[in-house]
Image 1 (cartoon, rainbow, N blue to C red):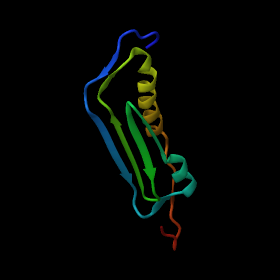
Image 2 (cartoon, rainbow, N blue to C red; image 1 turned 30 degrees about the vertical axis):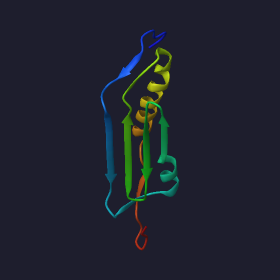
Image 3 (tube, rainbow, N blue to C red; image 1 turned 135 degrees about the vertical axis):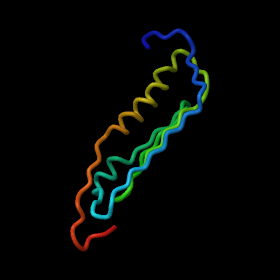
Length: 101
């Protein structure tokens, strides 16, 4: 919101948690795991994405509070950063015989 004048107020507790798993015939490559593992924390909340060869987990929470009009960009950055990470595509590959994690 350009030139916001009124305070920002977030009254609802909000938490989103998601976990994606895949069967033993697939694995996520190490470089993809590293690329997908990210987090961000601020006064407005936090989000975190973690990966292993078999699991992708994501958690987002927004803090309740009232902030000055000029702080809207920081609040929005938390939500948009979480959304951008959430929307990334994951890369898994078939396991070859004899491989395991």
